[in-house]
Amino acid sequence: TNTIGSFRHSFIHPASAHLSILLQQPTMRFIVVDHSAFTFETDLPPSARKMDQSGILHARRFAPSTIAQKESGTTNANKNEDNSPKKTTKKTKAKAKIINNREEHIFVWIANSLHMESAMTHLERNHGFMNDNYIVFIPYSNRQNWVDRYPHAAPALEVDETGRCVVQPPMQKRHDDDGNVD
Image (cartoon, rainbow, N blue to C red; front, side):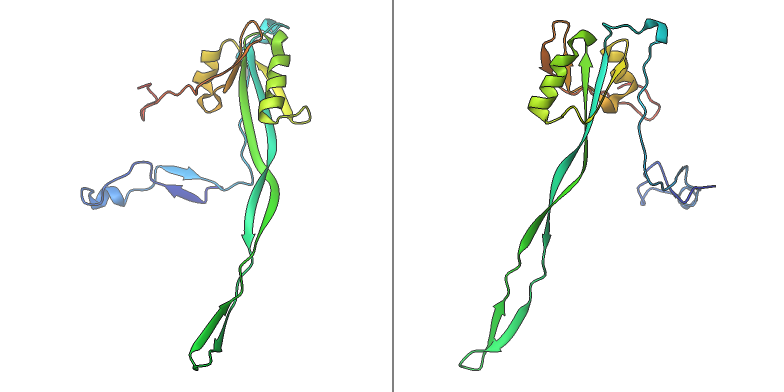
């Protein structure tokens, strides 16, 4: 198989663990890949999709990141007039390098797709998303169903039925190990 690593899912305190438990095979496996991706899908059949549909606007962009890199400094030892060591240090200079590799995503709940322009204007003016970025609309039945299915993609912004943009606090649900909501 392609499995090249593994880890134990449960954490055991060494003082209370039995040797037989520690020697068990790991329960989860993983593989190393070049990339990973999420796929978001509508919950509506094609016949239920229409022009004034609710759903999620998903925008992605690659934003510039500034990373400081340092040049190495050197220290030279010379002697003072009293024959004691004199230390001089070359100053370390930092150069800022811009790298365009930080991927940013934003999810917007659109109550009625006829008000899409409100969301697009808000994303451009307040978040720096432009028309040349990856922007898609995914029809969806309602906001709560979206968050239940994709909690990692909860909408940060909502455009209501009137076209008004409202910033939304994150919707978070906690789940136990069996997947039940706390």
